[in-house]
Length: 303
Image (cartoon, rainbow, N blue to C red; front, side):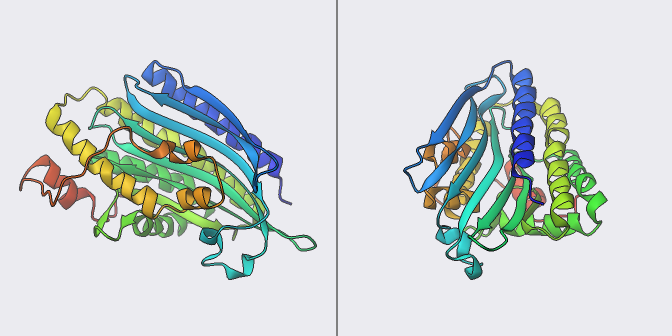
């Protein structure tokens, strides 16, 4: 049986735990923006956006919870599932993106969500989706191994085949096709997942969400005091430009939110506060910047 209230309660609690942990590390609280879509709009629902900007650790950190309903699925949701056309929907999730100030601390993204496609008189079609991925500017192999090993440990109780499958999915999904390069070093990604039945699929989602702090905080604590200068900040801004390109061109959550009439401020909180583009820039051979492209962005078996 689908228990929407249990999913909502878990997601709100996860948002609390993550923002409390990051606020404690940064020394600055998150601002909370509770919102509600007016019921006269084509998208109904509510959410709670939490944002930290200009912190000592985080230049921008956003953790959003949303729970929305609509009468018609947008094109991004039915493009590969034509059998869902004509259904309404209910969607809820927690999504976060952290853009640290120090270029040696990676940007990170995590999302856990549930989606129901509904129609009167028939059983709802439901699935879970989500995952997490790491985007370093200056890579560290130990950090990458730790991040991936934590993801694997969260999934292994549900099937040893899930981590390699979801890792490959992540590598393929977070890829800028027009650039021919990965956004970062990946992690795990899954969508349209219901194969374990509701209870076990929901348990897997919870374990993925609960693993986030274990995957990311040790990396933050190890790298946050690494000295950096203008060169590193310039490269960080350049790579952040790739992050913007992916989110606006390929990201399913961003496209779904904008096409369904979602709350623009909450959807676009994932954008970095500063980004840069340079014409045909190439890293200096043998430089730390070149090492990112050679040693970290090509998909690897980190565990």
